[in-house]
Length: 206
Image (tube, rainbow, N blue to C red; front, side, top):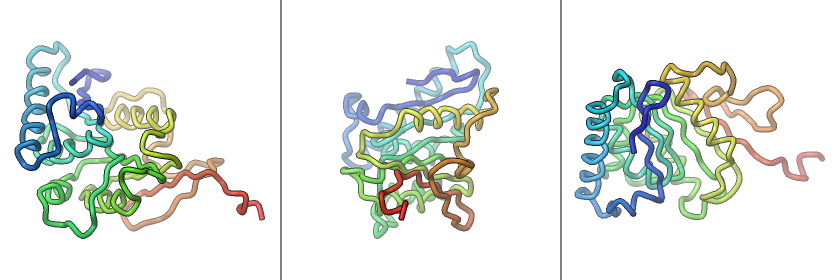
């Protein structure tokens, strides 16, 4: 699905729907098919959509990241992305997926579930590190793979609107670290805005 978002384009695959479209994680042929399908969809939307052509934003979690990273690496019209709920082993630096991740240089918001039962914390952090973007942010929340808070998804939409130049709300703090009064904690890393939102444990009060 490719849709207009405030007169800008948003390519938005649902992670779990990818298999239903006939894409199976089966190597380079599957990856090339998915990338080709999405590039054709962007072409088709620009052919029929009366909205003037503008930058394209990508939103893809879980399998949406599995197929989205190679797409973003190959598609220059995509200028901002929300990725996450996916990981890659730190020891695998030369696979096609790892090489594609190192070609992702656009602004990225990466969502991670700290207790994800499908992808380990280390693998998710390794993928975040692989992304070559100088402007990238990671948000982590407690819970399993399907437990992304509704507010986080709304914040991701705000991130895309703002980066695509169509946010008029003036609110939100996505991509900017912890706000005052937020119980989360900001961790400074060189060149990276890294933010972990956590539920305070009973021991914090001692």
